[in-house]
Length: 349
Image 1 (cartoon, helix red, strand yellow):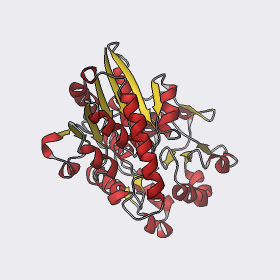
Image 2 (tube, helix red, strand yellow):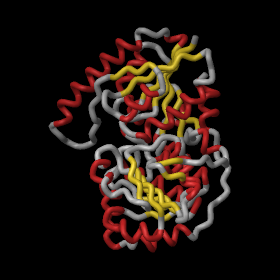
Image 3 (cartoon, one colour):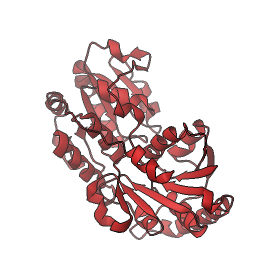
Image 4 (tube, helix red, strand yellow):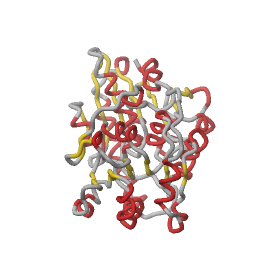
């Protein structure tokens, strides 16, 4: 039986591409699936709930700037490498492959996999390459990319353009009835505004909605993914036109499909899914993202769909209600979504 060891995490952007592949592989009884992640990242909760063997290892942040924290994190990364090596020795190189979606936790796992003779695949989600995947690329046998623009950051002989592994619901036009906060979204008498700062939430976006909640809720019914660190603050604000939630799963796909307006950060997963669905949206890129990757991701959606980009420094001068009205008038665009998951699986198995 073949073993596939997944690694990557720290955010939903690194987790959800792996999940899309995992869900497809669960149909194959000849595969043993495993996951190596961090102790406290989003992947630690979600993967365990999937019933997949989960190994937590120590991880440290890789920084491109001077910081005393780098010294402590070097020890954490070293410990993570030792833990990963010990774990990899359990698996035969001939029957095991490793698939990484990036994030700091993936680096020691990928290095350990290579040192123990495993074949290593990595997937880069963004149009600009993160440091973790840049390091991992030196140990990878094959590098899958989501955007053509990122091929310039890797050795071309290793690169395969696959696209972003989309969740199954993205690839069909069906819309399920979604029940959130006791409300069936099929019964709404107002257009739906869906707001998300990603799986961990965004204080900047949360504050934007908070300061404009009264006038936005006059026009829209609002579902707001606030993140686990902010849910307590927002729970008391729930009313007949506003529902804050900590974290959403696959129901987010039907929220996209039902929404008149989407306001979001511009992580690669969110952008790729909204492009695949042909939904023009309002993107607020994370200013401190490495190489301004979220801005460049959003530019892909602006070019293809006419999405609107609001940079963080522009927010104080933006009338968000007028911007929502502007995006609401834009037509959805028919697109041909690439089944990146199948392309990856053709090489992985």
